Image (cartoon, rainbow over all chains, first blue to last red; front, side):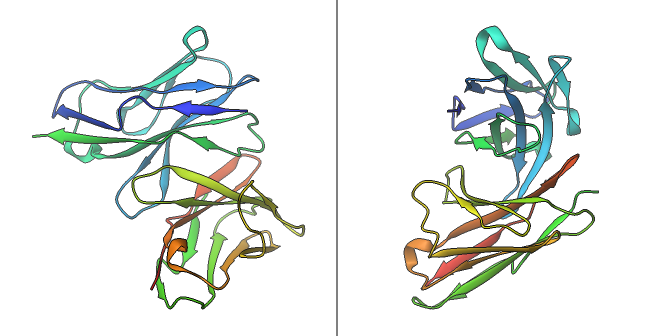
Length: 114
Length: 113
C-alpha cells in the first residue's frame, strides 16, 4: 500500500521568497513520485516527476524537487515565488511507471503575498 | 503533446437523472484511462481504471453499477453517473496514458440538484 503526506494544507510566502512544499511518502516498492499543480476549476498539470536516476529533478516554471530515500521525502522548492505560482499543489506516488495509478496527497494551497 | 479533453466542463442535473462525461485523448492513443473524483478542498480519489476493450477495475467503495465506465476506443472513455443524487456532486477528472504519454483532463464539475 502507498500513501502520501503533505505537511501544511496552506502555505503563504512573499513574492520573491523561497517556496518549500513538503511531501513524504510511504511505499513498499521503489516509488515513482510526482508533483502536480491545479489552478482553480482546472485539471492537473504535471510539474515534475522522479522515476529513476538523478535524485534532483527539475520541472516547469522553475520548480524542482529532491528525492531523499532515507527521509522518504520529495519536497518541492522554488527559489523565488511569483504571483502566478498561487495554486493548489499535489504530491503523488505510483508503484509502477507504466501503470501510473496515482495515490495523491491532500494538497497544499500556496498563497503568494505581494 | 499528450492533451486530454473532457466534455462537458460543467453540468447541472436534477436528482435521479443520468449524466455522461466524456474523456478524450486528442493526440495519442490511450491504452489506459483513470477516473478520479475530487470533493471540495480535498484530494483526488481514484474511482476506477479502464483499459481499452475490457471492463473497468473499480476501487474499493466505488459502486460500479452507479458509475458506469466505457472505454470503447483508444481515444475515448466515458463515465456515466446513473441516477445521480446531490452527494454525487463533485469534480470528476480523467487521466489518459500510454507508454510515454500521460495527461489529465481539465475536469468536469457536476452539480446535482
